[in-house]
Amino acid sequence: MRRSVKGALFGVAMAAAVSLPLATMAQDYDSEVDSDVAVSGAPRAMTLCGFRYMMDVSRVFIRTNDKVQYSVRKAGDRRVIVELQNTRIPVYNNQRFLDTQYFNSPIKLIEPDVMEGGTPTVRIEIELRRDVPYKTKQIDNELWIDFPN
Image (spheres, rainbow, N blue to C red):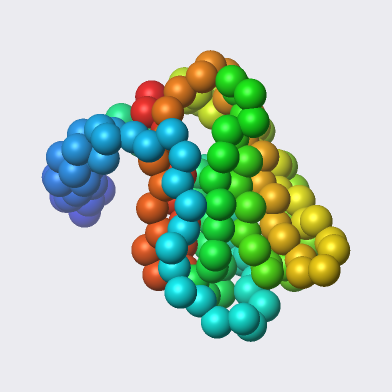
């Protein structure tokens, strides 16, 4: 009993510590951002596409095996397209869509797909409930697209 209370208090303290920077992250949204990352010509692999609901923002995160060249653009009022150049999805399970409609979030659906051609490109369509701004950030091999709640 004592351990569970101690663990719960630790969890509350960590949540409070994490929620402070999130308020600042929800500000300064860009409408369109392209990456300026210098990457080698070696093919990349998308290892994970996920969704994280937080207090101030809803985050779509995309993990690759290395930094990747990407572009993000709006396609109409309720759709955001993320394209990862020279990238494949080696595990079929990572191509499945994420249904996020049951969260109190502007994100309704996340759908990754591979576009074959000269160089493979991973295209991730993010369907929104309403038109909201977004902010992108790439840290090492993870790309974040944040939408304010």
